[in-house]
Amino acid sequence: MGVNCIRVVIDNAEESITKVAKAHGNGALVLVPKRWIGRKVQITLLEEEDKLMF
Image 1 (tube, helix red, strand yellow):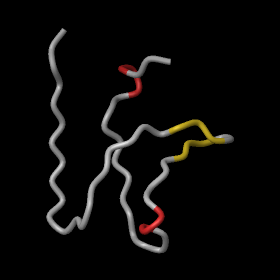
Image 2 (image 1 turned 90 degrees about the vertical axis):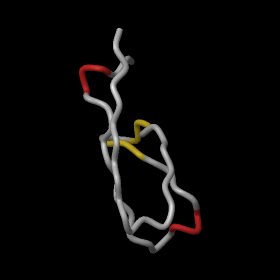
Image 3 (image 1 turned 60 degrees about the vertical axis):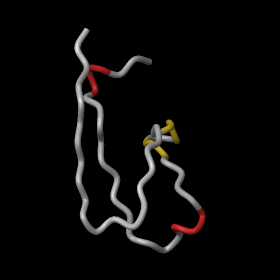
């Protein structure tokens, strides 16, 4: 099994975290630090659906 690498570069980011989206109702939820409330954030999908294991 090979190793796949994903490189994402964002020059103007103040902080970065990596988390797993959790099921929430009809969608998904990603919790971020409380200090991020009211701030502009960007979510990037890093895994292809066919590679996820449930």
